[in-house]
Image (cartoon, rainbow, N blue to C red; front, side, top):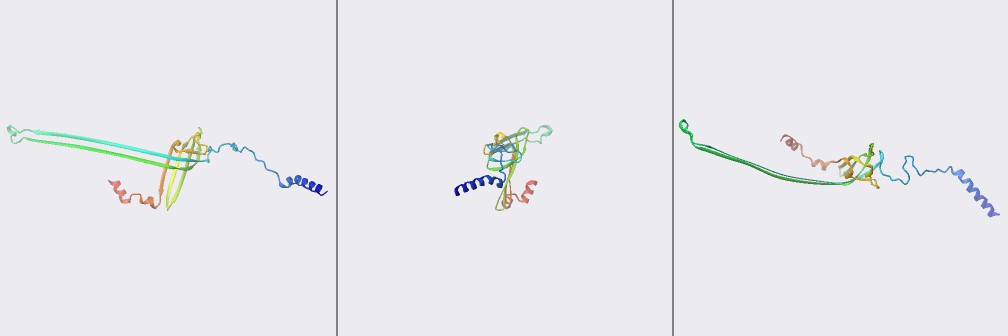
Length: 195
């Protein structure tokens, strides 16, 4: 009898529990913006973020060689007749100039910067822009990147190599006590302007 009572009580609890617990909320596997649960999360719309992997190397080599030479001579014979007072004379001169110079400059930049899609063009290319500011000992190191990327170049982990950014503008700026010491003084700038 006691077992029958507990069985009825347990069955009633299972039937009444959903009424007091409220309605169960069901969620769809498809989101409202059209990106499914199993779709990739690559940047595709304005406001989406992605990471640019910076790996740039620039090398410049210039070699110049110039030479110039000039020589001349003049001879005047002794005068005759009324010009006897002129004595025989000769003069010669030469001038030469040679210059050689060479310069080589190599720069390498590596790092990562996370940018935002600011515009999607009609051909599905995306304009991206981002700034990263790092402060260290009252010195600011700032990286700014702007350019155009193709949607196809975005990898599965939502990154793009910097070599695939078109019309790229990559700027490295800095300010602070250390950066201020690396600038020329005002007098040096005036002399460089004048001379």
